[in-house]
Figure 1 (cartoon, rainbow, N blue to C red):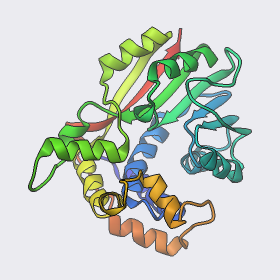
Figure 2: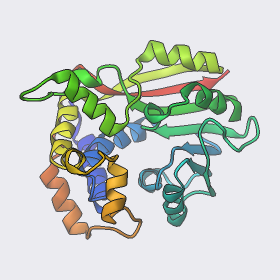
Figure 3: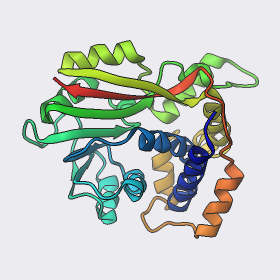
Figure 4: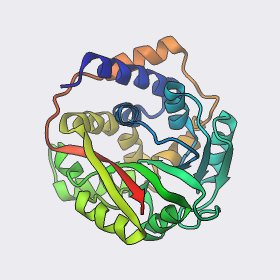
Length: 279
């Protein structure tokens, strides 16, 4: 079971996430658990690349805990990198594809990627590029949904479970749920050696996320014409902005309503944290 200090960290993270992005409470719940796990594990030292940095708010929260880092942010979405640049936490923010990184070989001491690789179509080319830009013994730390993610979900009260899972995957744009052996094989093919992996986001936590998503992003996804991705819906509503913030008291109240409770370390787990080393 999580200790009190871990639970307090998760609650503080959830409060800050709700302050910065109140339009995605389910994602914030997931990220609060996820970031607390990343913080416990720790980022490598040296010059780093935040691969798939998005709007930068997750890294902003991480750096508030661990202090400033020498970081470059990169994302394929120019609207996201524009917001990341506004935050002022990166030495440089670049708009580019992960399978064609605009850096020389052996440029970074580490690459970090938080819940990104499951969305990337050109995964093998991306892993090869990550290996190329890492120095010898450089580290690659990333988080992804794991092979038990579907098993963790409660599923529909009525209707077909397979159809329900397909909708979840489409809304989240999850393209893969590799386990340790699959990641080890594909990392090795790119010249990276898996050195650590562990699970996080318990089955109960996944189901809590599922419940919150059902009545927020899931509801919008079902009723918005064309079944757009959540980020597109947020932009259409005009809420996805660095300047769109909740007052601290309201963010704290929202976090309490979402309720991050102590959860037993039960199996199955929904996600994996993996670290690999450049050979």
